[in-house]
Length: 467
Picture 1 (cartoon, rainbow, N blue to C red):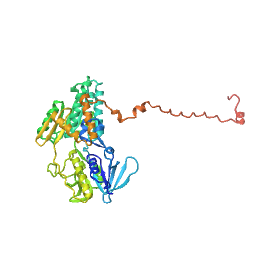
Picture 2 (cartoon, helix red, strand yellow; picture 1 turned 180 degrees about the horizontal axis):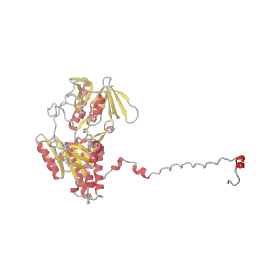
Picture 3 (cartoon, one colour; picture 1 turned 120 degrees about the horizontal axis):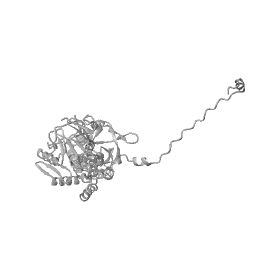
Picture 4 (cartoon, rainbow, N blue to C red; picture 1 turned 135 degrees about the vertical axis):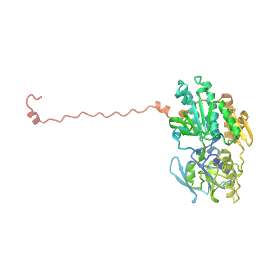
């Protein structure tokens, strides 16, 4: 039975395995998916997780629960020898081993794209993983608790200052959701006022949200301005040492929470270890059927999809002629890839991937959003409903959909939960602080040195009265 190895269990990897389970006949092929995480993260929900509108575990999809016929391996693929069709599997514990395969699907997604700016690696946090979203939420809640005990001054200002770098969809949604959360928290902190909170968005371009029209992006800017946002366009971050965000304009913003959302790049570790051909931007090159290509030549037995790949956009709407790295393409590419892979196994011809972008939708905090499809633009409450409706339906599996929808329903009546669980990052501290510890062993007592015995001759030799 041929083996299909899927490298990465994010959008593209999860959906490829999910659809292969549907299309493959019993005994037709064995599917193995390797990923260091046990779940797929629904990335569009990360801003709402950070704002406390969605429970963190509801924004991820368990591999083992939903992939019943796929062999799940929680590990990393650290090397691929495609000429011999073997991959090196490195688990978190235990020795690495070689795994043979017949078809390989590389869908390891993307990571945050950063630049060598002093202080960013040490002080900033991304918005590409569920753990990051949870950490951002807990940090903001904890900072409110700390600030409420301090008098007005530089230290309190720092705690209540949030800087988001990047004005794309991820940055705008994160910025707007956190601004919405901070505003709602003020009713629980009578010591703090709206003017005490400071939110800064840094964007290197002259506009935000290039995925929508200029008119729509300008409306978003005005809307954020009404809610106390400070947006810095045509501005770059040049330093973030010790949390002091230095801008290209010369301004310095002391901030305790710096969130980096300035773009993504294909997972470099997987691309390099795969040995498969890549373009200048580090993406694995593919044709429109999702097969890996080296120039014009097809690399037999190798497939790719999602953010890690450079897939031609046959609709003509892609940037540079390629599909943009977003969830919309990743999911649809994975579905097409699964069908094409099964077709090749059966000696049939694969079909090219063609998908016209349906538009873009973003949440801008509770009851506010923006939607753009062609010339049609929706704003405010109607767009917010469209945002939740689209992503609620797009969440894979009814089990996950119900958890998200049920959480939204509860929050509608009960409000957001504002409890911080930052202590979960050091879970043993409470136990170890009070745990009884064995007393250190007592140091051995040294016996006094004995005086050397005197001989009779020595005593006889002593003069009278010497003692």
